[in-house]
Length: 178
Image 1 (cartoon, rainbow, N blue to C red):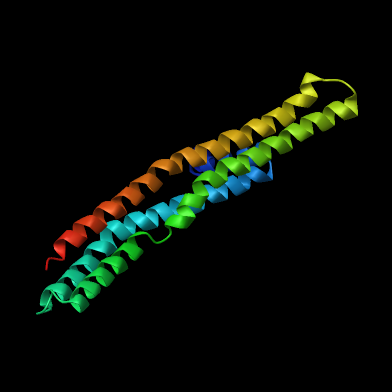
Image 2: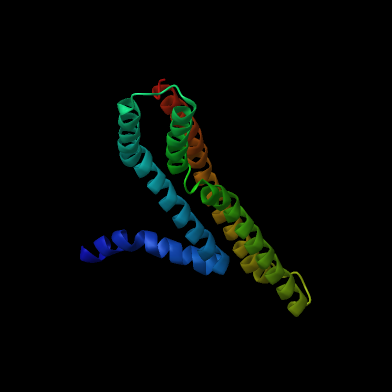
């Protein structure tokens, strides 16, 4: 009974190690890219759900405490407040936008590496033996699959956080009334 429990607990770890063993070192880097991508997505979720409401309320309270809101200086202060909130909302977006296309590119490098293994085995044996080619093709396909999987899972969160930052900025700008 305890052995089955340990197998269930360590199954994700074993699955990843099998994937890295079958796909080569590029799968490890693709997996690391996915971990960083989803860590940043969780951080952005935390920011939008927990941090942003407090910051926005504090800025709006500061704005509404101002007596004078129509001068040139007041408009610039309003713009700076909105810009500061927008900068907080869009933090880490450049890194998120780089990580999504990076994983399939790493998968492509792993695919080329796997195909080179196939060609090397063909050159060593002097023939196209299916058994010797299978390892390299498997290596190539695991890299491709892993890279595309990480990239596809990251597409929606990146789009969601970009559109949410734009929407929240517009809504906050409307709340900073003159």
